[in-house]
Length: 134
Image (tube, rainbow, N blue to C red; front, top):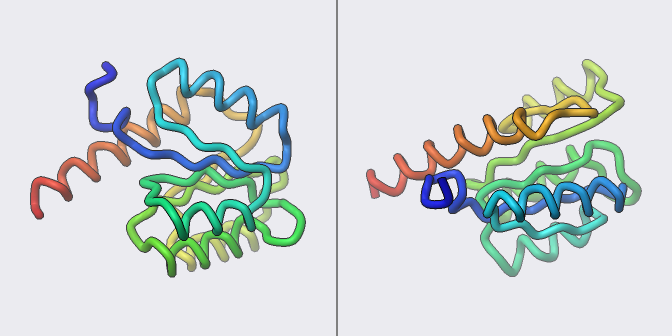
C-alpha cells in the first residue's frame, strides 16, 4: 500500500496539543505517510512558505492564529493545499466560516485513524488525477 497515491502526500499537522501531535506523528509515519508536525499555526505558515504541502491537518482552536485564520493564509500561499480542520469544540459559526474559506474537510475530535485514512485516500486520488491532467 505504500505506493498508493495517498501515501505520496506531504502532510503538515498543526495542533497545540503535543500529545496528539506525537501520537499522530508516530501512527501516520508508521503507515508510511510523509508527516511534519508543529504546535502553532504561525510555525505552520512559516513552513508552508518554505515547503509545499499537499494536505494540512489543523486544529481549529489555538493561540495567536486559529485554524480558520491558518486556512485563509494557507490558501494564499498554496491554493492547492487541502486543509482539514479538526476540533473538539465545533460550532456552526466556525464550520460556516471554514466552508466559506474552502476547507477540504472537518473532523470532530476525538476521531479515528480510519477517518483520516479516508480523507487521505480521497485527497491522494484527486491529486493523482490532477497530475495526470497536467
